[in-house]
Every structure is written in C-alpha cells, then in structure tokens.
Image 1 (cartoon, rainbow, N blue to C red):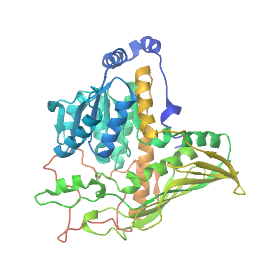
Image 2: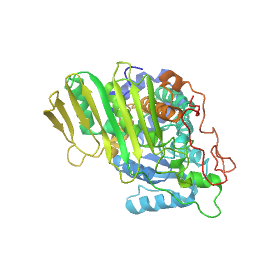
Image 3: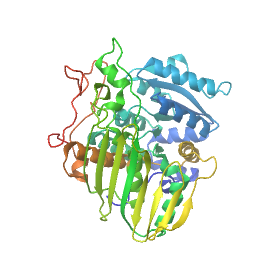
Image 4: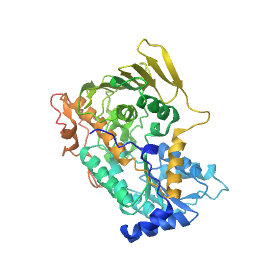
Length: 442
C-alpha cells in the first residue's frame, strides 16, 4: 500500500513518436492505428457521457484545452438534461465549429454511452459514479482516451473493475485523467514539493474536512417510476452515489493519501443522520467522522457534514515532526514551524484554474504521444473513502485488504428502465438507513 499511484505530472511518461515507432512490433495493431491516427489528424473527436452540471463544465474545459477538438456525441439518461447541456455548449461556442453534435448522435438511455463512445477519440465520463466502472471499461476496451470524474465507483467490485481497466489502459498507452483536480493545482503541487524536501518533517497526524450545508434535492413528480426518481436524485442513494463521504469528501481524503505517500491500513469511525432525516434524503448519512491509520503510523481524522447552519470548512491540515501545513483549494497554503510561526505561504498564480489545467495536461499528453494514468490513484482513493463509509455504517474497524476484497455489491452490473432499484421505500416513503452494529459492510 506504500507509494500511492500518484496521478498527474509525476506519473507522466512522455513517449516520443520515434519511441512509438521503435515499439511498433510490441503493440496491438488496433492501438497503433488509433494512436497514429490521433497523432496525425488535426481533429480530436470528443464525446460527453453524463450531461449534468459537472459533465457540461468538463466538456467546456475540454473544448478550451485544445484548438482542434470538437464535441461530436452526447449521452444521458434524460432527454431534457442532454438538451440543456447541448444548448448551453452550442451557445457558448456558436460560430466556432467546436460543437458539432448531430441529432442522430444525441443518445438517451442507459445504453447510450456505448454509442457516444464509439464516435469519439476522447470521452468524458461524468455520470453518477456507480456507472463509472462499466463506462470506463468500455471506453478503454475500445481504445479511447478518458477524462472521468471522481469518485470512480461505489463498491469494492467496482474498484477492482477500474483497476483492471487501468492496467489495460497502460497496455494500450491510453491517457486517463481523474477529476481529483488538486493534483493539478499549483499551490498543492508546490506545497508537496516543500513537504518532500522536509519542510515539516515526517507527517504524524492530520485532519481533513468537507463540512458544508449540503446539495440539491429534486422533489418526486407525479408519474415518475421509482427508478426515475432515484436517478433524478442519485446523490441520496448509495448504489449510484456512495454517500457524500465519497462524492465530495474524497478530495480531502485523497490529499491525505497523496501528502503522506501511503494508503491507510484501517479505518474506524461513526456517523448518522440528524438533520436530513426525511424521505427526500434517501438513505445516506448527513455526517461522518473517520479515523484512518496509515502504515507509517500516521493517523488522520476525517470529517464531513451536510448540515445547514453549521461551521463551513473544506480543507486539510497535517502535523509533522518539524512543523505543520494547512491547505485548501480556494486559498493560500501555509507552512508553520513547531512554534506556529509561518514559514511559507503558497498561492496559485493569477488566473490559474486546476479544472482547466487537468484538461490541458490530458490533451497535451495525447498530442505528444505521452501517457497519464490517474486511474490507479483514483480507484485507491475512492476505496479509502469507501472504507470510511464501511466503518461509519457498521461501527467496525475495516482493514484495507478486507475492503478491497469485499464482495458486497451495491451497483448492479447492468441497469435498464425495467430494473428494480436496490433500495426501496417503506409504506411511509422512507428508505432503510444503515444502522451501526447491524450493517454488514464487507
């Protein structure tokens, strides 16, 4: 578990065209043809799978990352969401020729992702995370470069599937960037360089936070099937979302893994729902507190909360043998000595946008014939968050291997409009909420 599979610049393996030619006999013919075509052709075709706010934002950033990329296909479960995303992008890029999605290339439904991916060189995967392992696998099997949002799964079988596809991406020399954008953010990268140079000594403890008021709720509408209701409100159902400890707090948990340079050996914690207790909040908790123990002995306290009117904090702190550091995505990273005196303040340069930078790096790597593969770290940081959820739901200590090898499957391998959702409401419209001491996590 040591040495996390660090994404981004530290894992970039730029390979010159001459190296590709020299390695020609070692690679499958299909991949060579695909790579040669991408390197020669001026246009890169882009497909968007998952047309919500984050997917639309990612498509916008991809279109800005390279002068010769064009959006050619879109897929979503819902026609209205696809239309809204398309209209927004078409208006933003009117007259540029960068949004060229024909009506026949707008795909609605659970299988639409395959048709969209088939038309592209590069795909954006931004559906709810339960679907990610299956969409990612299809994209890699078909030789597509990928940007995929975090988290990358909601259960351990999904994590193992992503890791298997990550290995296949390596074999095919495909680029994979995961939307853990702090790895592409200047103040985090520069802070880590100072930590590796010994600025605070060896990290012994830390605290990571995502405490906020929560997110949207979409009321149930007359005539909706149970599956449509859950897909419209996916955030509140574990099989597609994984709870907010995965969906948002993964950013901060991932920073702990990244800065410490390890993945935890165990997690224990507690949580529940005190404020969001109604039927419209599905089955997830509104707060989690987890203690992660790392192989080096470092201990990190993780807390995330969705409760309006409470303290807001999103960021990270770590204490080392020679000082401490505080980071957050919106401000300045600061390093202190053991007496609390500020030793360094590290800000992003003006105009720096890590959401844009991760797409800039992806397309530059594709053009240069290089390779980024963030999928390993994306999967293992997702598993770290899943461990935390397993610990808070069950009240038990959860080990890394125990979590990784779990056969508990939240997400069905296939879903159609005929599928019965894994979680159903009772006669009062309320969903079963995991109960510590009773919940079987692994």
